[in-house]
Image (tube, rainbow, N blue to C red):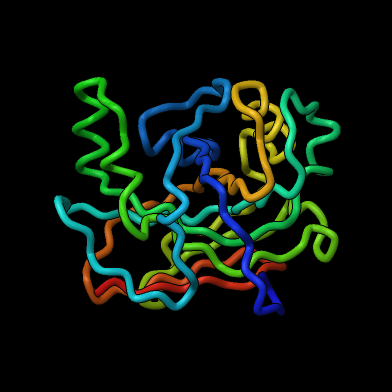
Length: 213
């Protein structure tokens, strides 16, 4: 948690796919479909400053910077108008993706787990309470690799807003305190290699950085 030695107890991680129009286009889609979700295990989270070993089984590891929503109050069938009352806070995350494994799974109609849900695949910066920053509806989101900007957009470009995402997720499962929602990535995703440093930022939040080893 930002400004504290306390830790947010992560229960599970939900991730939203293709939630920025330009990224949807670069991934071969361009529709405002209902939001879809995939998951990562809670122990995929790692702190800012972590040295992340380049993962096994891949030659095409990609970065995806995302706004992370931390749920503080649980509920099912949450109305979009009431959704922000369930948010404890926000952080900056990176959804690391073994793109070659993900693409191979897609081609066969298989689950994406080995492409998305691997060790240390969900770096997350310190979480800031929502009361301290508001809802971040139009905040600059950016990722650099070795100082070069790869992704730069604003959260206003999200296809589905944070309240809509919470409402949609809560119709399928009951959200609980400790759930993290990675809300999708803007365009500019691309490969990283061992030795690369990734710096991720969202205006108003504590930054996040990791280095591949």
